Length: 146
Length: 103
Image 1 (tube, helix red, strand yellow):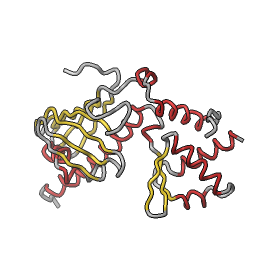
Image 2: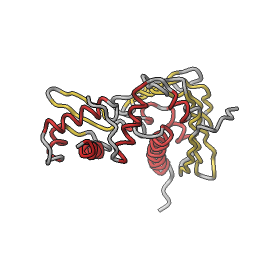
Image 3: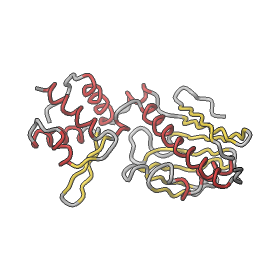
Image 4: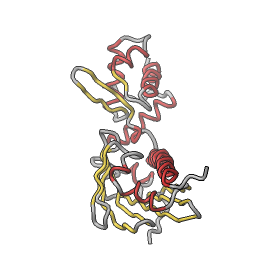
């Protein structure tokens, strides 16, 4: 299985609803957009693709790898046009475990570029942007004259 | 001078952090500087990828591009936490509606 946890996010959420309902919110386009993004096209079957309009501007997209209702969902994840996290570059795994009348949802976002990799990344803007963000926060001016 | 400019940019960034704002709204909030100065700051922020601009007719709207603003993990964690919380509320609401009433 996926062992690399060095650059992963893990979130656990207890939901007072059966796994079938929770799974529907993860895979049914109509329900999906009620909690994430402003538009979504989901073809939730192994090998199927999805596209999520996150905020009217940024598109997240990828492919379903595992669709095992109502227990487990694995998909590739990335932002279209993103320098370090393009589509296919990271993996999101969601597992649903029933617990009495509730469901424990565990989400893992795996394969994120680590800090070192990002620093080495040759694409200029992100590096510049993070320097600028630092300057904005501590007040040190590092801005070149436009 | 640069430090003041930087403080100003920080103020603008805070303003567009959680909501998109029009150029007019930003200018009326950041009152003590001239419009050209605000406009210049907006351009610097935009060029550096910290905010995004949307044009609609003759109006321009700005908001922070939070992906560029911090460690990726932090941004993604915030996104998932916020969104999954919303999923929880909606799924629980639907489950309650389906459940037979006891009262």
